[in-house]
Length: 306
Image (cartoon, rainbow, N blue to C red):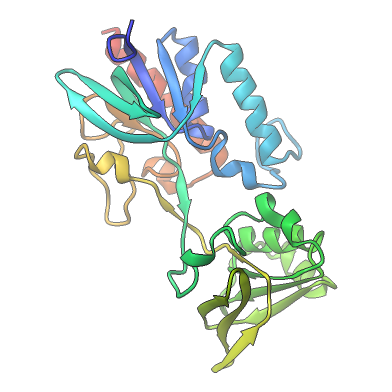
């Protein structure tokens, strides 16, 4: 049977906490479903330490997502690591195009998560993978005994700086005047022997030839050139909503997918869960993303079995 001929009850697009949480409950509801995700585990993989997941005093993002994936597969869920190019409505069903295959489904849960926010400055895109990174956990080992910079003033930036300090010989943490990291990190940042805090009004350029050689920032009203070989950008994330826009799914003025209490969108047959939605008052936590996936799966079960 061709994949397009087989009609699934549900296809979950996204393999982060929301998508995996949805799969766990879809399996318990005996829904014929598959999970398609380009990055298994989503952005959580990059977290070096998670201390707010119920039942785990402290766990890395990689370990937590491995546990969730193992549970999904143990319950019979099929996980396909691939990107989804597009989704089309076909009569009462949907066609999902991914990795050269076409899948047919009655319903969809979009668990698209967030994408790293870019600075959109000269040199940034050209040096991605050549010194510019959005994931300290992924790339820290490439900068052993080198000077690096972290841009951002939140907890993610602070955690990235600390993690990088285990490898790099010097870490510059560039932040604006208003910082949002946990107050408990303040002393750690100030007293760390490898981390230097720089109050920066703006970062204006990434420079280099074949690889990053430095960045230009504005500090105390004056332009400053920092010689670094790595730049880690931690200035937040934006929702990944390109796929849903093709289908006419309603989004709000901040590009979040609008959902109701059952995680349903305005399009019949389409649900959404996790960080890219307006669910849980945009709380954007692992535990709420997973719960929203469960709610969406339960809602689909009720719809298909009415």
